[in-house]
Length: 424
Image (tube, rainbow, N blue to C red; front, top):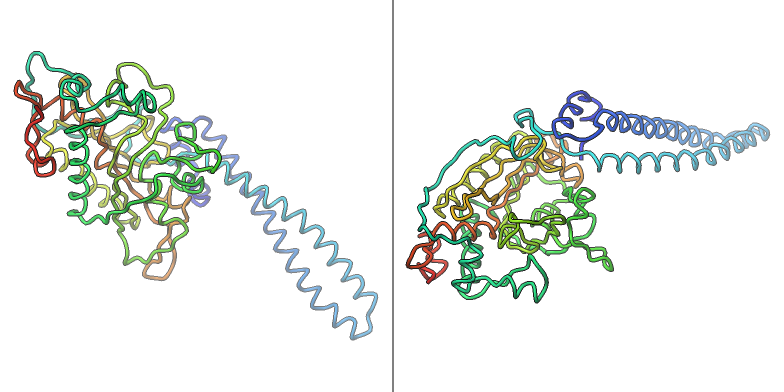
């Protein structure tokens, strides 16, 4: 959530940033925020003035009575009663203005950094880097959903029977490959200094609002209505919310957490070839990285996260590219985001496997996640997160890009985790 200070002191820059994200009626919305904030502030000032007068009059009433000035004392009592009655109205007005302001701020996305390129959608993203090994496949190369069936690794039909489309059942070496990737990603994260967390996979509404999934992505989340709880779309939500309403010491930063969880996304409106097999699921496994940092160090943290994800893809021997996302393709909450994609040789397309984002103070302001600096003043933290990595499309690329006439080759880095070198 944007801060009032950010909006009032940098109004034009905020509007330009929101327009870069193609936020509708940016100028009108910001003008409304300023108007409501002025109303809230003026009401608060009047309320404070009235309370000060009440306190002053209350102190004088007793003295007036002692001096025998009953009429003046009665007048003071009448004035106090009037002020208290008026304060009730002011207090209600201030609460209504504060609520309206909060609700307005919840609808406004984060402002992108200057280095975020202009653009409307994915076609306007900038390719920052390409790497990995080129793949040569047999002429009769199969997509991963055919390979999964051929080697009895993943049963999509059984998932439909048990739950519905988008909930696959992993079997045999397919299940072992999943577990191997999870352990590999977690081990690599721990080696890089991340502390592993095992959080809940359901969260309350406050957690959803804290990281910005609510109200923006409410329709994309599975909602347990009886208990008013949400299945998490990513471990970012519960892990970042560990630091909601927390004041950290500067010496604790940066905080580096990793977590493996199942993730749940309704993906409403998704259809066609892009959702075949593992390309888009409603439930999937993911290892997430979360950092809480000081503003002056967050860009270095962001780069370290990018380097970590790139290192994972290199160890998995997959062809990849890194994209700098344009304003129109960025998430609601991100100030700067890079996507990692791996190339699926059999499908002849790029598959997104990670987004690594810096949220600046946007989430921290919602969360009231702060730190105490060397001068003992509290400041908002910066929050960052990235997938390291999401499994479905990694599995798809591994199966497709490593198929040979003898079977599917397992990358060397994964062999100790799998216990086998080939799926045959």
